[in-house]
Length: 229
Image 1: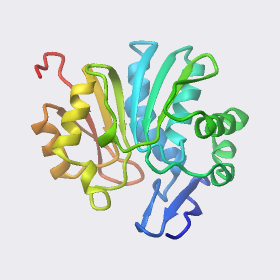
Image 2: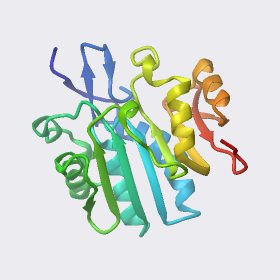
Image 3: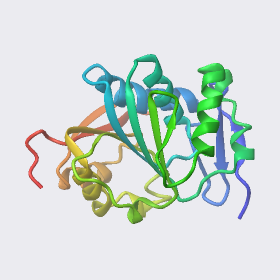
Image 4: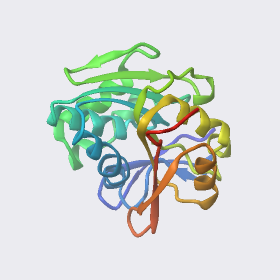
């Protein structure tokens, strides 16, 4: 297996290139700005306007960028975030320490957040500061038991359906749907019609939002308040 390669994206922040999969962890047009657009602006911020105690599930922790951004938003908004992330292939601390997100956004707080997320005990809840609880689950989502009607927000940030088709299935989306609260929200950078149809078949309603960096669309899926499972 080839080592992941650090790549500078257009906004100056790092992503990783996985040669074995021929995929990047983030958009080459800007790692930080993509995460802000897809997961923070379209996912977290609308919820923070309504509540200050939020349960988040992330499929694919990767570099920890999304989690770190959420941690900073929690601190800035005096919110409490319980964050559950599924990641079967954690990155090494030596590689994580080279990521330059702090120079693009958040400064020292961002660097500490990323390092704390990756260095915390696995499979046990860990409090990082006064506003963020990290549950780093070192396992594929298929092997994780999720509480019913528990999550307010889901970040679906797996590799693309072409690369990881086993994660973009009705079985996975039905499992996540069951674990979400009524009115819960799922956001993902993917806008493929097949994926959206699969989500709809599992009970989600679909919103088509403007994608990042010239990409026409991204997806925000909602669990209806009247959902019956």
